[in-house]
Length: 212
Length: 315
Image 1 (tube, rainbow over the protein chains, first blue to last red):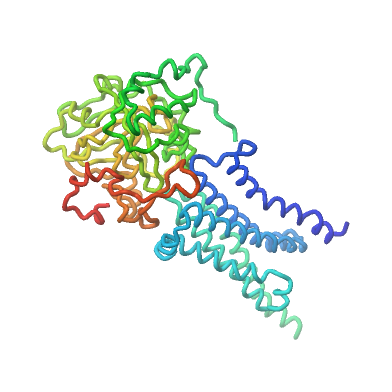
Image 2 (image 1 turned 90 degrees about the vertical axis):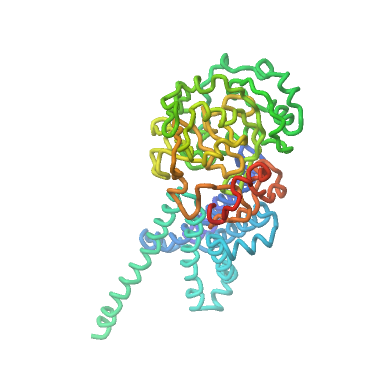
């Protein structure tokens, strides 16, 4: 099997199944299958699990580029779109649970929350920003947008910052967990800043090198 | 995750049908109190020893109480960890006997009292109260206890006693959550003396007719049903009478979000979330959210305590 085939027939299906495991666990929690339980407040639990899964997958998506470069695995890029779409999927489910099960479809409260509660405002903003990225994730859209595609998809950095901030702000007191997420995000974004600086520093040299 | 087996020998477990006082059940078969006792049949075998308590039908809310399971696995008790299920997993390390309470400040009877001594002569009653957490969830709980005023008068507070201050046990070996500085330990709470002496304010030693489980604040906790749950301090080791308003832990920790009074008020939001409604734990999907009542439904009894006060300012 070639590397491309291995990604297509082995790694991608595996990542697909792995990304569905949190959903499967939540379904078991709701139905009580395999003795799974969501505890005394299943709504909050589902809401938090979905949100955290979206965040985990988002950080994983952002880890693809650095790992690919550092470990010399260029084909890893083939997994990124699927991970990104799962981020969108879990973010939508997270929001749906909040609206349907938590607020019980009270749109008045939803509006008030989005306007008045900063952590919901930024979470909602992050969700909205995910939409254009999901919509433009097809090969056709990539071709059509060309260079602008990459510029548009840099939105993911803003989304990640908002998402971690959203997590940090809704915690009552014990911020250890959101701080871990913030730390991981800082490393992932810091890597990109350093890489961009390194490129900029080396760019004039290479120009000089080509044109002595 | 490994499930912890309670360290109770089978011989120690009291069969509910033996210990459960059927006369109490019949006497209390009124409205909410009756249903609370009926649902006691759902108690797990590991529930604490039975208490001789009389249902007080005056204090019932006409709603089905939450299950024992819900009340004992969904807890905010940061001394045992910050997740809702942490206390039920970790609180087995708390030793509730021997237990003593230090009484200090503006009163005649200062000193350290053994818990048994404090409970002596206190007639235990069951009261079904609403419990509203500042996080906008709520429960209905059949507590067992006695009015705090019955205890406080025993210490003979003097005229300078304007406030009562309560302190939770400080012992990181028994309370592993205290090894992390999530809050300034020990946990401290306070009430104005008139709030403390109010007949609704309860010293609690049990729930569902049984000795209070550790994760719910054993062996002695406060319940102030018209205030957010964090006012109802758990595992109390100190009670002091003070002239000045004590500072309470959550207020010290995040002063713009948690005040001293913390009266349940649907009109005054938490800075980060609305307090206008709440979700009842254990209620069916799509039928759990309900409007929050002023003073958690106890306005008739307690609103007069705050007459003329700006409740937005004194939140």
